[in-house]
Length: 259
DNA sequence: AACACTGTCAACCGCCCGCGC
DNA sequence: TGCGCGGGCGGTTGACAGTGT
Image (cartoon, rainbow, N blue to C red; front, side):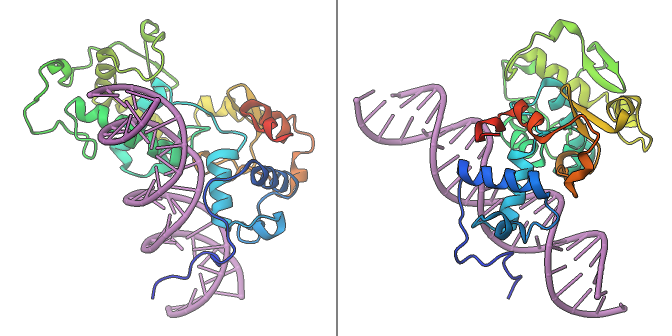
C-alpha cells in the first residue's frame, strides 16, 4: 500500500552531502541544467535520488541564495506573510528573494515561533493568547497601537534608522515590540504583497532581463522565488547576459568546490 | 573535563498537485 | 475522463554544535 518510493532506495546514498557530490551536482547543472531531476543522479554520476539532488540544489547550492540569518526586515515579512498565508512556506519564500522555504520554515520554528509566544501571540492564529501574561518582566509586550515609527519603502514596512544598528538575533524588547506592531499594522504591506501588478521595486530588480540579488545580477529565466528553478535550460540561454554561474558562486562560496 | 541538555538546520519522508498521455 | 509520473510542498527527524552544570 502507499505510494512507490521516489527512487529505488537500494544503492541510493543518503545523509549529508560530501563536497565531491556537491561538485558533481553543481558541475552537472552548470553544464546541463536540471530538466529532469529523476534522471539527473544517473547522468551526473551521483548515487542519490533525484529528490535529494533537487533539495540539495534548491536549499543549499543555488547561487542566488542568501546565506546567514534572516534580517530584521525579512523576519517581519515572514511574520506578516505567515499571518495571512499560514504554513505556506514556499509562497512565503517566494516573497523573499534568496531565501528557501526550508530556511524560512526552520527559522520560523526555531526563532520566530518562540518570539511570538514570548510576546503573548499565538504563532498559529497570530492573535493574542488568551492566557494571562505570565511573564512579569515583559508585560509591556501587549500589542501596541501604530505608535511605532515605521518607514514604508516600496510598500514594505521598514524600521526607522534608529534601529538599523540592531545586530544578530535581536532579542531586545524594542525589536519584539517592533515586530508586534507590524503584525497589527500591515495593511499597506499586504496591499503591496497581494498586488498582481509588478511593483516598482520588482520592475527595477528585473529590468534588463536580469534579477538583482544583493548586487549580483542573475538572468530572469526561471527564477521564481524560494522554490526557484534557477538553472537555465538550455544553458545557452545565458548568452549575452552579464551573468555566469561562476560569478554567482563566488558570492556564496561555491568557489570552495573549485569553480 | 565530562556529561547533560538545548538549539539549529540539513536532509528525509510521504502526500498532494499538475501535467501529459 | 482517468491514470501515472514527476516535481513540489510541508512536516518531521536526527546529527551536530553550543551552552550549562
